[in-house]
Length: 56
Length: 462
Image 1 (spheres, chains in turn blue, yellow):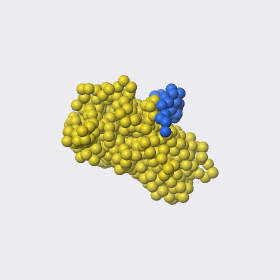
Image 2 (tube, helix red, strand yellow):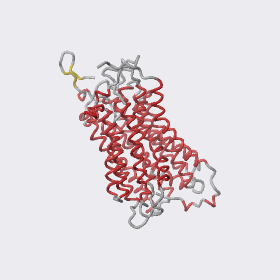
Image 3 (cartoon, chains in turn brown, blue):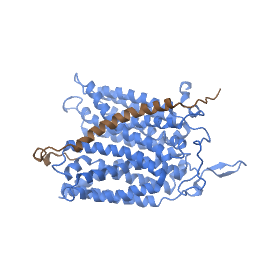
């Protein structure tokens, strides 16, 4: 059997990273959108009664 | 079986010219998939409405019953990692990744049948036991391979993979929601078909990892890299067998280190949403609290990469020293940021984010710490056994947090005060971890593996 001495091409490496990078970026983007809600201006205090907060 | 011989370790040895930068994506494909387990909560409501569809009906499963599926999966993660770690070292990463993919996908398929026949035990067995075994196998399968490919940057390499586990939930959660929305209708919640599709998608994605992963040839080193001549006392050039390592003081000290770090992290994760709402009543509502939870998961993931990379420069022991010393101070100070004291949401969010980054960092840095102490020979197997600390913390953390809080509230302490006590106990736990970390010393020579010298005599080898 002859030994394969082919060097991994830059395109192969890039493709491998894109394959895992795209779903990860999509997930991070969705989480980032979700986390932005923390920085939204809260509604008037009267519309956010403390008693409505859930507890675990 | 001949058809599966491509999974053999010998068939996965890298050819000259193979780039080591193909290994992290292979590892990420596995970790991004199995990290889905932390998004399991999105199935809780649909699973509790299989009969009623839009609301729970008589005969529907209760959320407390459904919660056991996740708990079983996490317990199985620790147990299977401990049980199969040594097998993995011999079988090689490709076979272990394949087994992980089969178990993980099979878990979804069995759960599909559990949904269509409305048999909860099939979900316990499928997603919990079979899928959980896939989680454990998948979690440890690329670790020693990455360490061998990146002897110059073991923290960075394992950090990249374990970061994927944190990122997996970020993919799994929106993907599940989109699929359930797509399949919902006709008297179905859509969760069954979602299980089928997700099992298939994850199996295919994990196969990319299976086919891409390679182990380095015997004696391979990164180009231009030489082992440091003057070795750091905390980084061994020798190897310790997994069974021997299991009996060393260092293993159990690291077990305490991981267990306390994870338990403390769970202290925040478990109560993040209600805690921020209680501490800043009126200013933070449920929607903003959901955003806070999302932000914490981002820092949890980023911390895995950041801290494990930092550990390559400052060392593993100092990195954990930072986690425990800074963590204890921050946990102690966190309740003071509430509306009753400093009333600073920014400070509360900032401190929580740092704490969660160190929680993630603790997971990602521990494989390199094990490699430093016990060598690369059985590092995956040792890591597998150490993950029982995670299983223990997975039980200990929520129990501590919830029971302590209930006890406080039952004894007339107000909600804000109850959080303060819980967080102070977490700070105390980190002090225990700090002491355990400070006690870690290099492994004694008597535990090193024997190797044949060129003369044929057994010597304490590398």
